[in-house]
Image (cartoon, rainbow, N blue to C red; front, side, top):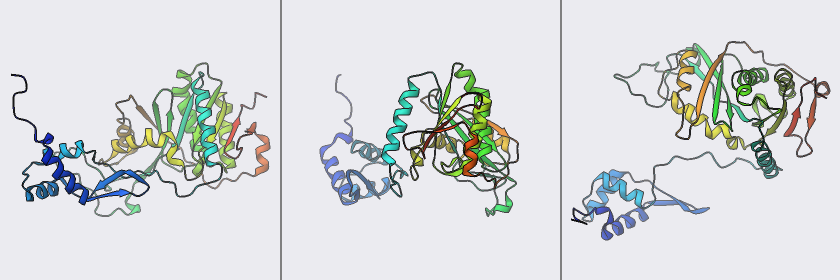
Length: 328
């Protein structure tokens, strides 16, 4: 019989009114955005408060009510910038234009960054994993207990939706980034982009790939010479690194893949990171770079004259390109 069966309580008007009154009394909001609200009540507390006024419901029904009224379990996002820098919006517009230009051609566009370094050994890690018994770790996380460290440099191919993570065991230097870029090109890039003439790289403003770093520009020249492509660089402004695509399209999924797992060896880190994937088709490969990198190398501003370096007319401090030395 059509319409038969017990009606769901979630559609009960009186229950929804009572639920709304309870949530209104225990809901805070964002003074800058009235559409953003949150509550400090747990499902169990909502069940008790409804029961106190004559509505006896289960946690499952409370879950349905929360969903119906637009409440979801969320976490805070690192979206607010600490400081606004001059020309920030102009640089975002320039990056947008560059991405549109490269999407319309057959040249690759990648986003790069170095993820948080991971200590190796029997150290405690946040997160959960399915186990038949708890994993043991040291009761303290002193740095001297680590047997090594993994330095993950990531490259996100924005056209192919593929990521390459290169794990170093030394230091994050411009030379390390250059080796990571060459490794990506030789194993993936030149296969996917056989007719490429240029390579667009989006990166942050600081770290080993700082826009102020002369060493980074020397390292990029070395990459351009080896892969025989013009390299176009666009830095995100300071305090805007979270807008770098790899930060929100790759690294959260890589972090989730290693959460709750003991990172005892580089090979273990590699195999875990390669498990990262998304429903939209992201795939991740990982490789280990066994090479010691020295820190403290210095390059003068005058040394840049030896490079085939061209600064853009648009915000040249953040935008420039390097052609192979054999092409003038």
